[in-house]
Image (cartoon, rainbow, N blue to C red; front, side, top):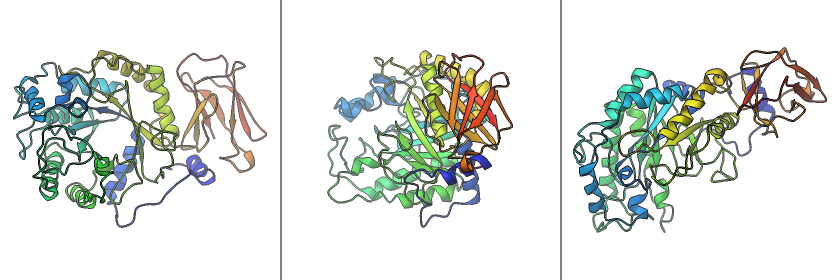
Length: 441
């Protein structure tokens, strides 16, 4: 970690399955600095928006609906998101306290949301909108000092040269023109455009690697070639891959889909690297817009998930599926507004923090920065006492505490250190989603 108390915690309480840096890849100095900046951000917004949004059935509708790709593509002729305003998006996201945006440049349906020279199946050439969505988004992000990352699909359900994997079997492809050399060059050309046309790009976020997990003969994606291509163009650009396995050489951060690092879901049993970590999750049940899915996470749940991710030393990348008209769903904006108000007061306990290594307690979780511990109280005890085991971050439980106070108003709180425990007594039982206590050591 980046500070005294977190370094001490990491030494005493090592995370299980910790693995060291990958062999064969030496990141540049600017890349290492970019990793530090990425870790400090802690909260970002994922945006899944594409041609699939027109159907309002989620981003996998071409596959799950067993649609013919040529018929599906005709929807591009009516894709005119008249209410799209990149500046409004970015300002709302910035107000939530999020520090970066990851946007779907091209999903599995093969449609590019930017003006690409290597295909006409894109936002500018195939739709009446005729505007480069990514150019406008990039400009707004740069104006507001919000980092921009790109999601990019390795899998493609429409191109004839893509080697067919375990998905995309019902889209009408003949399958007799599969040529990975050709497809790889297409991807490299698009990636070069994304990294050179839109200013500074913080990261490339890959998905679709899993499409060939079931091949009888292991499929060679030649990821090292792709990664070298990216780092040659932009050494500071971080690379992550949603392959659901241990990190590969050339990757700069490790991602966990719908699960906290070390959780019991998709990440169960997977090695946790010493790279920056990121968990991605949906605010409702889908990544792309689905008109019938209004089961959005509450603002309280969202705040707690941001903090729980931080307590694991991980960023949270929270997804929103924009509507086909170009607007972000109002319910998502309402949630972000509440989160933003909480972050204005408590952001110091999230940004730039690390894991103490202390497991989640009945009352909540902890984060740390410099010589400060932050106790995030979700469920206070009825007697108003918060009990924290400190023997895992201090020799023999001897923790020298200078002060303990409520973060929202700076009110001093009563405390004592006894029997390897820090016991804090709250002045009143708080009602907020996360009542933060700052402990200065």
